[in-house]
Structures are given as C-alpha cells and as structure tokens.
Image (tube, rainbow, N blue to C red):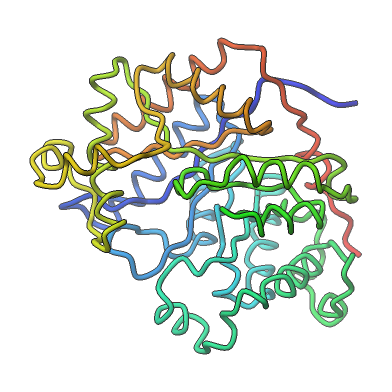
Amino acid sequence: MSLSRAVPLSVLDLSILREGSTSADALAQTTALALCAQDNGYHRFWVAEHHNMPSVACTTPPVLIAHLAGATERIIIGSGGVMLPNHAPLVVAEQFAMLEALHPGRIDVGIGRAPGTDQHTASALRRSEGALGAEDFPQDLFELMDLLGDRRFDTKIGDRFKATPAATSFPRIFLLGSSAYSAHLAARLGLPFGFAHHFDMGGTFEAAEIYRSRFEPSHILREPHMIVTANVLAADSDEEAHWHAKSARLTGYLRRTGRFLALPSAQDAADHPDIDQAERMPSSRIVGEASKVAEQLHQLVARIGANEAMVTAVAYDTEARVRSLQLLNKHWRKSDSFTADREVRHHQVGLPHQ
C-alpha cells in the first residue's frame, strides 16, 4: 500500500568554510545542521564532495557520513554526491556497504559524474587522466550498482568481488546531475534522480520532463522519483533574510569570475566593492520571510513535479542557518496540498543480495 504525506524536505550541506574559521569549524557547523534537521523532521541530510577548494571542507563524504550517522539517530544520511569519476567503483561500494551495515536503512549514495574539482586535482585523485572521461561514467555506474546488489547489467565484477561479505541490505542509489544527460540516464536505469537546481545553470524543467516522460520502471523503482535541490534562506523578515544572503550572493558572483574565497560575514560582503554587481546577478535563490519562501518552494516543486525538495542554506551565521531550517519546516508543514509517494524509501532499502 502506498503511503502519502506532505512532500518531504531534506537538506544538502556543503561544509562551507567561513572567513577566519577552520575546517574543523566548518565540519562542526555541518554536524549542528544535521542535528537541527533531524529535530525538525527533515527527511534526508546529504553532504557533497569537493577537492582543493578554499571554501569547502568536505572532501570525503563517506567519512563525514559515518560521523553524522553516528551523531544522529533517525534522519537518513547520504552523499550529494560522490563524484564517481574520482574513484574506483569497488572502493565506493565498499565504503557505502560498510556504512549501510553500521546504520541499516539510513544511508543514501548519491552519484554524480562531475569531478568536483579542476582537472589537475582530478588526475591526482585517480593518478590517471584516462579514467576521467565522461564516456566511462555509465560503465562505472553499472559496476557500482552490481556491487551494491543490483545485478541487472551483469558486469561480472559482482561475481568476483563483494562490497561486504554478508550484506542484509544495501544503500539507496540516486543518480544526481544538472543536465539532460543525467535525466536520460536516470530514466533509462529506473533510478531516483536528484537535480541540482541550486547550480543556477538552467535546464531544470527540461530535465524533469525528460526524466518523467522517459522513465523505465525497474525492480528498484516502479515510478519516477525526483528530488530538486534549491538555494533557500528563510528568516523572520525579508530584510533579515536578504542581509544574511549577501555572503552567499557575493561568493557566488566571485566564483563565476574565477575567484574562490572563504565565506565572508554579511557585513564584509555588504562592504565589498563587487556587492552591487553580485546582487544584480540573476539567481534562482529563494530568499525572504519564511512563509513567502515556503510558498515559492512549493511552487517550484509543483512546476517540476518533484517528489522531494532539498534545500541548501548558505549564510555566515550558524544561528541564521539553523533558524532558516526551523522556520522553513514550520511553514512548509502548514500546507497539506502537496503529497509524495514514499515507496522509493521502502523498495530500495532491502535490495536482494544476489
């Protein structure tokens, strides 16, 4: 029997490094946000992989996932995502199979095909430029699926190796992306799909249409299941929200112009000579008083036809980020007109070990 409920809210955190802070500070803030998300009824909490970036502290999602899953009790913890071109599929499978054994039913493995860094760093990660081609991604994904219990593609790797000796369940696999290519592949494989609307690259509605119209049911998923991730910052007033958003607006603008800096305070961002250009730059960010933000996010979910909404809230002040999650959840739950099928959670947790 299908269970329906309000469209689930989840969180993506990038472990952003603030000016004057350390990597330890950034990871502690991520932990605080995971606990806040759990306490406020959020469905998932994902962390992302980035390398050699001065503003991002999470380089190794499985390590941080292990920490977060141990620090929390109920919320699903996962990667948003692991960049598969950087890793051998067997290594990723072993890491997430162990996480699933430690925290059964609570682990997601979101997979992306971008390197999450520059090409020189990507080459150093795999010690070979030959393994970085996008054309290798489908085969790597098939091997990962094979190792994590989905034997549809018979890559033979699952016959030779086991990700863990005696699995009783496997982590849920999500295909992530920001392009039509990823939407096509997720649809063809019958996998749940996460779209990075927060990248501000466009193509969200096209990708959603491709995924839904071309979806092929699988034993993993009978119907399409899509997560949309958006930049969202809610506060008690529009003025407060836009003040705290200055930090992310500025760093987003600077990143577009090749300048990667730690996150400045709202005051430092307001004083920066490029802040006017940054605030004029078109953006998909949803920023404002919490009830308005919740309504705009509902509208985005409805237009896309998404099954879940995932938010990433970037601000210098930890209390502002915590408050944003609290307020958004409060106003989100006031509406019962949006429902989502939760079957993806139940059908993917217990993939048979073949």
